[in-house]
Amino acid sequence: DAKTTQPTSMDCAEGRAANLPCNHSTISGNEYVYWYRQIHSQGPQYIIHGLKNNETNEMASLIITEDRKSSTLILPHATLRDTAVYYCIVRATGLSGNTPLVFGKGTRLSVIA
Amino acid sequence: NAGVTQTPKFQVLKTGQSMTLQCAQDMNHEYMSWYRQDPGMGLRLIHYSVGAGITDQGEVPNGYNVSRSTTEDFPLRLLSAAPSQTSVYFCASSYSRHAGGGAEAFFGQGTRLTVV
Image 1: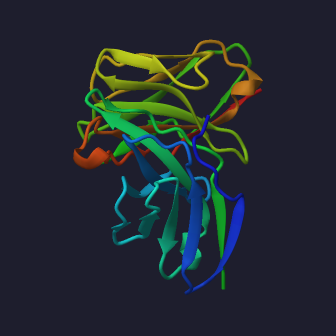
Image 2 (image 1 turned 45 degrees about the horizontal axis):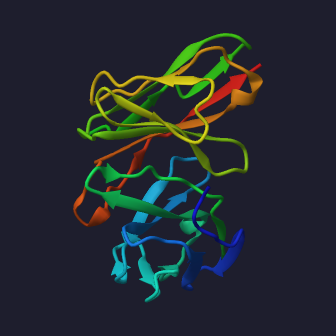
């Protein structure tokens, strides 16, 4: 079972920031939060991941609450090409390696012109 | 680098036929996995491998076999195709360990399988 809860769908105006929430209230200490997206029927694409600190890369920012029970993915200036299904995944890592990526149903983000 | 290559891209099978979906990666990744995605659904893990000679079951392994004889290849075999196996199949690869827990997974473009 997926360990995360996401809204089914969201809309965002083009050029505005898209804020996608994720709840992971049962996250363990060795679990990271990952975000992937899937555009149309293509293979999923990695966006960003984090443990407890906020993270930023060229695609997005990840804000993780202090208790780590929820997070928000921020696309600072959404474009039409950001229309996709966004998946929030928690994944453990340890001495024996990473556990598999288990996908939930994700959030369908529609960027509107 | 070609990344993750899946073949074929499209396939139609008759019920009861067998076939192998191919997946190859040229990034020297230890970790490879197979997912299926039914219409309107998220991806479900079928089988995965953390290295050559090691495989394990995922969420929906029934009806599928895998083997991992080399680091580069991770074929998925359908033993006796059923209409319920009509789906899009994705293969992924990544490093099994990475500093900071990161192990970005790279996905292939998918194999669209129809069983009639």
